[in-house]
Image 1 (cartoon, helix red, strand yellow):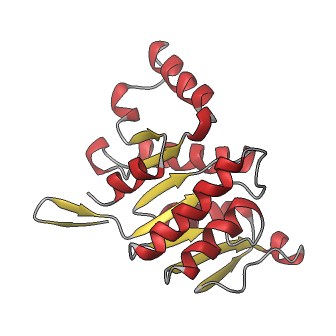
Image 2: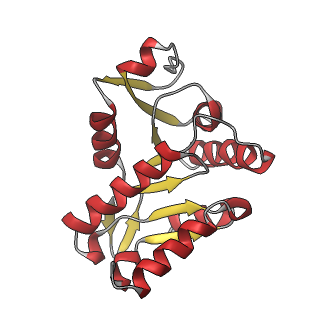
Length: 190
């Protein structure tokens, strides 16, 4: 993240998403359109390094649009032959913990597309990391792609934690639930 004359520029965008497609065509459509928008917009996409599911779809679309894509993949997925060798850079790491650490360290902003437990874990680790280590004004945006309401229960959970005193209102200041690609890109292009 770079700031010029009080304008923040997000260059390195970490994308968390499913290694499956899900059963709603809107999820795959969004992943492809996001990858294309990141590539055309000159953003550097950083993701889990796989060829499968929404991950592979977003990476392929970013590459096809002329973007720069870095994948960070643990050995377990290399052994399962899921490593994406057609991207700009593929970093091989020993395990999932190292992968998450590098994904968090690499991002100026974070996008959470539809996904399962792994995506939820990445979101939780990123949210927790910045909540602990960065003042609210220094936290990068975490954009949650709430397509077709997939993350409505998560939004309700955050509000419940707030109501019950487990998080503070300022903790949620960097979290943005977005219902469209246009909302996501508007925040990234500020």
